[in-house]
Image (cartoon, rainbow, N blue to C red; front, side):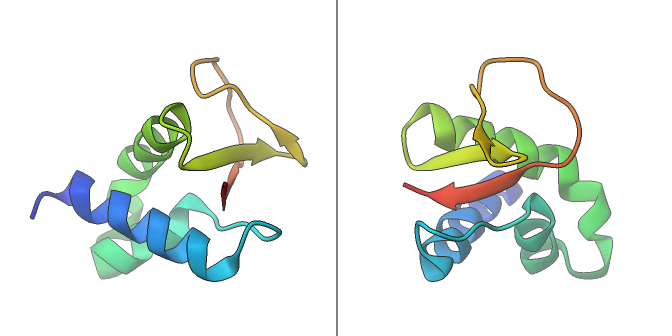
Length: 82
């Protein structure tokens, strides 16, 4: 299974486990997939979260505000199931 696919499944599983009122960090999914090399997966985890948000599976938030997955944003984000 590809790394992107594993990240996708990890984001969906982790965010659904937490429920719609709580969030996960992209690093949670990166750690679940990459183990000690999780930092190398952070860009992929963020891009995977964008794709999932475009498809309506998750929302990406920053400081409590929902972000447009197609907008340019920087800094820490959180992911929650929809």
